Length: 292
Ligand code: ADP
Ligand code: MG
Image (cartoon, rainbow, N blue to C red; front, side, top):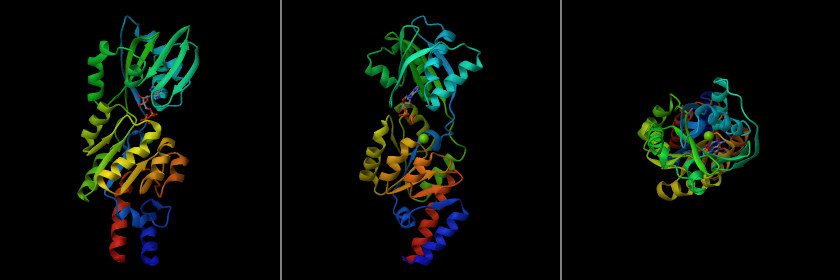
């Protein structure tokens, strides 16, 4: 590898908004066989919006939304922001939520007006033995639309199912098509529900999905992809993506993401535009071709 051609490649990349943070990143990316993307905030806008509420077991809609929003007002999760916003838009008064505890990768538990409240993914309900069958039809519809289902239970019984939509970025599909045209496989890694992830993967033409990964499971997902396809480039934006960015053969951080992700990455897409992945790949290939 001649230093001159690498410098030229790195300089050209900077003009395209791609920052190569580590010296060997240009060489490493050329070896990638699969590009894996985080879903939320990377392939999608990362600004979810509440689209629908179904209730069960006689629970009233607005009162249930107010109660759920009261708990979510104490969570940092983007899903929590969308639910709190929807309740405020409806002018609902939020009760006081106490003992709010995050259940990492699952959701939250709390106490509101003396009632035990549980909010989160279907797997949280499963784990706590709560029967979700009364809302099975709504669940199937939500997941098939690529939206995220959020369940709520009150005192151990199912109370509501909320749907949260986080649209894919307008450029995601074209970026995935270009990667395929360059002979790469494309994967998605997400903590979201399996059925929701599959619907979004189908919409984007993604080959392989690792869904319902727990926060410490993204590294294992990278290892699975490496065993199956070979060298892995991983693209992510969040704090929870940092270990996977470090574990991937090439870690690519979306520049609009968190500092922790950027620190862990080999390559940074300055503008946050995913087409930088394609630009970086082409530059890496052109540079390595010149060198060989
Ligand atoms: P992701 O980055 O994919 O959202 P997380 O580990 O943060 O991964 O969350 C995994 C899942 O747990 C979410 O998709 C959601 O279903 C559920 N969850 C986590 N936090 C909350 C919350 N505050 N409110 C509702 N659901 C939550
Ligand atoms: Mg993300």
